[in-house]
Image (cartoon, rainbow, N blue to C red; front, side, top):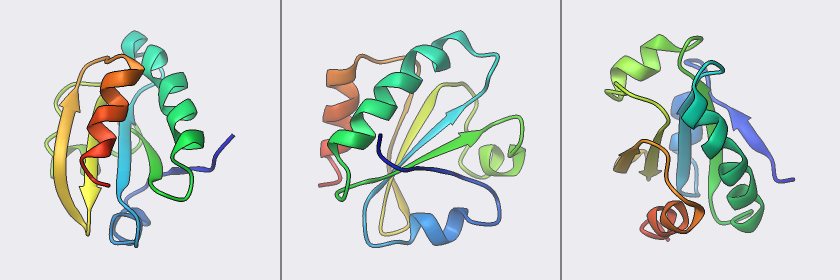
Length: 106
């Protein structure tokens, strides 16, 4: 499986300002739809390895990041390019739509 980074307040800025586009999955353990999206994100991380950086942020552990990026509902995927938010998608989505979402940054 591809490497998925755990996003924290300490490492987040350096990750989103890297060379590759970044897909951030804001999630929580108690969230049923998050558990549906998580394996899809894991699969896509393998398929886009070397093209996109994948990050998971636990909303219960990183409330400051949720506030900064206006994450009000989860699962919430935020796509970054060159450190800026390119797009955001809340709610569970099928793999094809998440892949299409990622393709915007490539």
